[in-house]
Every structure is written in structure tokens, then in C-alpha cells.
Amino acid sequence: MSERGSMLPLLAVLIFVALTVTALAADVATFAATYREVAFAADAGAEAGAGTIDPAAAYAGTLRIETSAAVGIATDAALRARPRPERTATATADPNRVCVTVSQPFTPRFLPAATVTVTGCAEPRRG
Image (cartoon, rainbow, N blue to C red; front, top):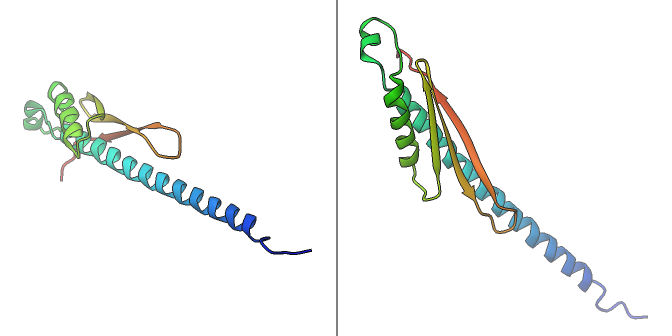
């Protein structure tokens, strides 16, 4: 009995597994980069919104956020930070804190499609 060609099926399986692992690694790396971008945008928006200080409260010695302006500024800053066409951002503010939620679709080549959503919050601080 000849053993000629007995390594061919094993080699084919190993090549398939190597290509599958490579594709998964590329998708996971792309997801991590997308998450990092979305987190950066959420943090940038929250920090920009937290910078809208109420002047009357500041003169009185307390740091309070001007909520009406903070929502618009935070949303705009989150959308302008490394802009992407499909990205959405929403902001909420109270006198002590601004939170921005940023969502962006993730369309990988191998894994199922998903949406990356990150919330970043910031508070005004003396510094």
C-alpha cells in the first residue's frame, strides 16, 4: 500500500485553518481600531461640552455647566473628531456632568456586522 499523497489532506486543512485565523485576526484588529475611534470621539465631545461653564456660577465661585450650550457643543465636537459619514452622536447634560454617546456601524469581512457604541462623560474641574 502506497502512502504517497497522505499529507495532502492534512496540509489542506492546515491552510484553511491558517486563513481562517488570519481573517479573524484582521476583523478583530479592525473592530479594535473602530472602538478606539468611537471612544476618542465620545471623550472629545464630553470634554468639549464640559468646557461650557456658566459664567454667573463661575463668578460666584462654583463650576456649573451651561446645559443648553453644552449639548450642542458636545454633539458637534463628537461628530467632528475623526469624522465618519455613518457616525451618530447624542449628548445629555446636567449642571455637573456631560455625557456623549457615539455609535458607528462596523462592517467586517468575516464576522457578522455590528454597531460600536461608546459613552463618554466629563465634569468641569479646576485645574
